Length: 329
Image 1 (cartoon, rainbow, N blue to C red):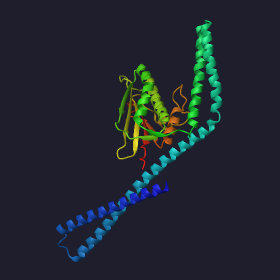
Image 2: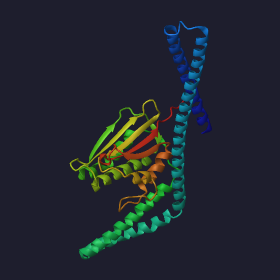
Image 3: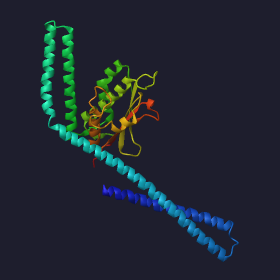
Image 4: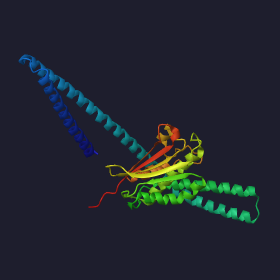
C-alpha cells in the first residue's frame, strides 16, 4: 500500500514538473514573440521592468498551476481512500457475520432436513388416505416454510465459508452460458427476454466456477424480481435483462454487467443493497447480494450497483469487475 502511494505521487510529481516546464516554454515563446513585435524599440530600463514583470507573472502562473494540480490529485486520493475505507468496513462486517453464524448453521441444517423429509412423507400418506385438500395445503405451506429456513441456512453457510474454494483459469463467457442454461426455461415462462452480449475472445480469469455462477444467479434473480413488481417500470416495455461481458481497454480487468429495464433502484437501497440481511422483498433473506459481494472481493474484483441512466425508470445495473489471469512466466 505504501509503495503504491509513493509510486502514484512520484507519477503525479513528474506530471507536475513536465506540465510546469511546458507552461514556462509557452510563456517564454509568447513573450519573445511580443518583445520582437511590440517592444523592440524600448530602452534598457523599460526592458528591465518588462523582464521583472515577466518573472512575476510566470511565478504567479506556476504557483497557481501547482496549487490547482496538487489539490486536484489530493482530492482524488482522498476519494480513493474513502472508497477503500468503505470497502474495508464492508469486508469487516461480512467477516464478523461469518464468524457469528458459522457455529450454528450446521445445527440448523440437520433438524430442517428431517422436518422437510417427514413433511413430504406426511403429504404422500395424507394423499393416499384421502385427506381433505385443506390439510394437504397446510402441510405444503409448512414444508415450504421449512425449506425456506433451510435455504436461509445454506446462504448463511455460503456466507461463512471464506476458505477452501478451488480456483482455476476460467472463461467468464462460459460461466454466463452455463448459468443461462439453468434459468432460461424459467425466464421464458415469465416472458422475460434475456439479451446476451458476450465479447468474443475474452481473456481468462482465475476463479471458482461455482462461486461465480452463484453470483450471476443472484444478480439474475434480483433482476427477475425487479421486473416482477412493476413499480415504476415502463408500461409498454417487455421485461428484459441484458447480460454483457467485455474487457476494459488498456487494463487487466474484465467486466460483467446485468441490466434490467425495471423500475430502477432507490438511493437508499443502492447504499445498503450489499449489507447482510437488508432486503426490500417480503420473501427475501437479504443474504444473496452480501454473499455475492464477498465472493467477488475474494476474487480480487469489485461489484457496484446503480440506476441504468439518470432516471430510475431506466432500470438497474449491476457491474462486476474481475482481474484478468496473470500470465505465467
